[in-house]
Each structure stands twice: as C-alpha cells, then as structure tokens.
Amino acid sequence: MSSTVLAASTGLDFSLAQQLTVVALCALTAFLSHLALAVFNDGVRPFMLDFIQGRTTRSATTAVSFGLSAGFIFGLGAPMALSSGVLNPWLVFLPTDVLGILAPKKWLAPLFGGAWGAVVVFGLNGANDLAHDLPVDFLTALQQMATPILFLFTLFPVLAITKQFGRLRGALAGVVELALVVLTMKMWPDVFAGAPAMAVGVLLLIGYAVARDVRQRRAERVAAGVVPSARGKAPGAPTTGGASEDVDPEDVDPLASLFGASAARLRRHLPLFMVLGAGVCLLAQLHVFGGGEATSFLIAKGQYAEAAQVDFYRALGFIPLIATTALASGSYGIVGFTLVYPIGYLLPSPWLAVVCGALVFAAEVLALSWIGKLLGGLPSVRDSSEHLRGAIGDTLQLAILFGSLMAAEAMGGGLGILIAGGLYLFNEAVGRVVVRMAAAPAAVVVTGIALNLLHWLHLFTPVKG
Image 1 (cartoon, rainbow, N blue to C red):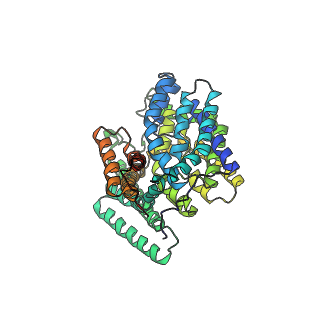
Image 2 (image 1 turned 180 degrees about the horizontal axis):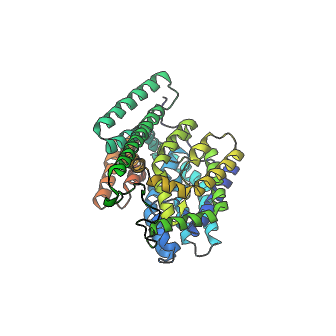
Image 3 (image 1 turned 90 degrees about the vertical axis):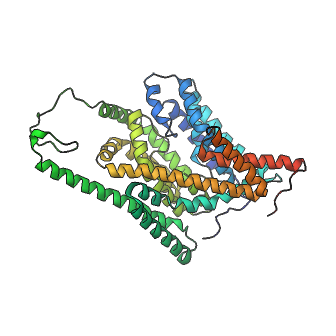
C-alpha cells in the first residue's frame, strides 16, 4: 500500500452542489433535533424521552447535548476535517443536535442548522489556508494520524473476539488477520491491506456468536422437554400448557409498551426520515464526507470500496445500540444504522443515492420493532455488537494518541511531543475535561499554535521536512 500520509495541499474546496447539500442537510438535521425525532449523539438519545414527555426543559436538554458533544466537535471533528480534507459526522451533525434543541421556535431550527452548514463549507477552507500558511503547519502534521488509525483499526475484531470468546480464539484471529495483511501488501499493493483482514475478523466474530446462540437454544429446548411442568417454565422457554395457563392479563411488559409507542411515533414521521436518508446518502456519494476516523483518510485517498467496507463493519457494532435507544427514547439516529454511508460511497450517481438513501431509511424505521425482537433472541450476537463498539473505541484511542504524538514530533520534534503529551496528561489528571478520543488531536492543535507563538518570539525554529 502506498503511503497513507496525504498531500500537504489537502483542501476543503466544495462545489456548489456540495455546498448546497451540506447546508440543506444541516438545516434538516437541526429541524429533526428540535422535534426530538433524531439526534446524532448516542449519549444524548436516552435523555430525549424525558424531553419528549415534558419532564425536562429545552434549555436543560441543550446543556446535556452541548456537554456531551463539544469535545468531539472541536477536539476531533474539526482537526480531522482540516487534516484530511473530508467532512465527518462529528463536525457536521453534532452541532446541529445542539442548535436544533436550542432553537426556541420550530422555524428557527433549520435556520440555525443551515447557518452552521454555511460555516462548515465556507469557513473551513479559509481556516485551512490560514493554517497551511503558518511557519509551523500543524494541519499537515496531523496527517501523520492516518497510518496508525488505518492499521490499528484493523485489529478491532481481534479485540472483540478476545473479550467475548477468550484468549485462544482471539490469538487465532490475530494470527489470521496478520497473515492476511502481509499477503495483501505483497499481492495487492494498491488495496488497503486491512480490508480483507477486517472482513475475516468480523466473520469469525459473528460465526462464534451465532454458534453459541444455536447451542444455547438447543440446550434450552432440551431442558424444556425434560423439566416437569410443575417446576415452571424456564426463562425464554416456549409455553407448553394451555393458552391461559399461568397468564396474568394485567402482567403487561411496560418496556414492550414503550418500545411499541416509540416505534409508532417514528413511523408517523416516515416521510421526514426518507428525506433525511436521501440527504445523508447523497452527502456520502459526493465523496466529501467520511463516516469515521479511518474512513475519512480512505475517502481522501479515493479508496471508496475500502471505505465502504470499513463503515459497514462499524455499523455492525452500532445497529443494536441505535435500535434499542431509538425504541426506548422515541428518537432515532440522524444517520440511522449508518448503512447509508457505505451504500453512498459506492453508488455512481447522486440521483441513485437519493433514491437508495430514502428507501434504506424507510426500511430501517419500519423494521425497528422487528429488529428489537430479533436482538432479544440473539444474546450472543447482541453482546458481540457491544464488544465491537468497545474494541473500536480502544483501537482508535490508541491510534489517535500515537498518531497525535507522531504529528507533534513532525512539527516540533521533542518540544512538540513534550507540549502535546503534557497537555494530554494534564487533561487526564484534571478528570478529562476533553473526552479522551478528542484530547490528543486537540492537544496537537494547541501545540501548533504554541510553536507558532514561540517562533514569532524567536524561541523556536520549525522542524524542516
């Protein structure tokens, strides 16, 4: 594989169609956030039920959304966009969460969101040009994050397998992935070497989980057949008696009732969600947007098939979370199950992306109740998604930290590492004012500003090369 470090001339120049798409989509997402129909931040979604039912105020919910989003916006979203030249959901959609909830009137929400979209498409390019003209170009240095992110991200299935199924199976998956990476680099140098390895790793994880669930169900059926009815029915075992046996007509599951009401609320707004799906898929098809940290650099390099593969695997880890929080809160994800990302990357036509995105979102919203029931019957698969999400977070935290220190060294040598590493450690010591995932890139930006100030004071000479 060729070097993953991008050209220093990476910019954020958008065509008129791309500008209009970003502005319109930001307006729509802020409107949906105002109506509490959808938010991007998974951590905010559980709070939306109280807001929908009037148990908390708009200002209090805004404060929660801003507190959970600000670090990702300024510490991760903005640095990633400026260094890769590709927009990302933390920069585009987290602010519209906040602005939509903040807006006191329904008609103000799309105005606030559209204004943010205009800031993104018109303001980032100026900031990008200004940063590249500085004596210490910290944006070009931030491109050092690409290689650690892309290659360490490859290991997330190995971590997930190890946590769920033990060290032996995890080690086996690690050996298989390493062999595939070496083989791909040797045989297909133009292909992202981690793509086949991730595919096999995820398939192994799903295979292990399905096999465990099949064995568990078989054991439950055997147990249900040999245990006398007088001893009662095991949890999850089929009822063997009459239709009215041991049934309390007032024994209604309140969670199931809530799930049904939430699913019905989302279905009532299906046309809005179809428009949202069309917009998100179109943005992905325009190739100015990446759905994740690794994807942003792959999109910047024009490796759309590999980007689609990476985001598809990422979606497997988030579908259960998004489905269950949507059913529990009545608020969907702004990007749905994120399946429109890989679909958009691969489609050849913007019009096709609009149609496919609308249909995908319609299918997702209509299938929410069924997905919730399905996940309830596949506990190991559900647990696999939890482990996937955790593994993705672990690999990216290490990759971003390592890449940020490489960036600090590239622009300031040992002094750069001292300042950026010191800021990161200080953030840890004071209780993580900035979330860990965003702390390292934010530290690099602050380090770049500090090194430029030292240069103007004739106390620092920029590192060459």
